[in-house]
Length: 273
Image (cartoon, rainbow, N blue to C red; front, side, top):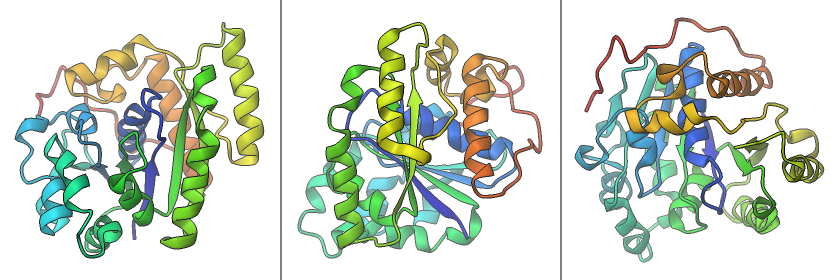
């Protein structure tokens, strides 16, 4: 039975999609059947694991609006044990069309329930907002991971967002728990980054992940090639950081933290779409 993890933050540009793609990929590398669901109309998680988002059809719009079974959208990526349910700009229309829909906050939850036995983890990449798409993700999730950029503005709105998470928990999904925060795009040379680290640590307390994701050019380059960091440059600092994060994530669950197979590399593969 899959554990469902939402990667969310109402602030954009905090490494949310990078975290969703690379956490999902790391879990797959470590031997766990993983599904990445793209709930962001920008479709960056879809392209980030090698698919052409414009040609990903059917997609999450069809699942949410037309109630298409989720299994009909799932495609296997080139990384063993990693599958994806993709999205593109079509999904932006779902935000409007769902307003008057029956059980509008529970569409994703119902869709996932039919495929939960196929995966160990379902990772959901949420849009940078508190609209119906994010509410659907939070209603479906068991846990939420909140990426936080190591800069001053990352703290703004954090209390507001966690307050919204608490409201979803009280009104829709009583089992929802905050897994914790993870610092992204961190530059240890900057005094401000270290100050933010201290403040975020106080905010999250013991739930704060000890793993920190640094600023890394290879992490920034990988999406342009439709690859996770483990396919693009498995020896980079970014890959090391996300693998440490995934191992910490698994260690909280008492699960295996050793890789089952080596990452697929660009030298031996072509994109699936």
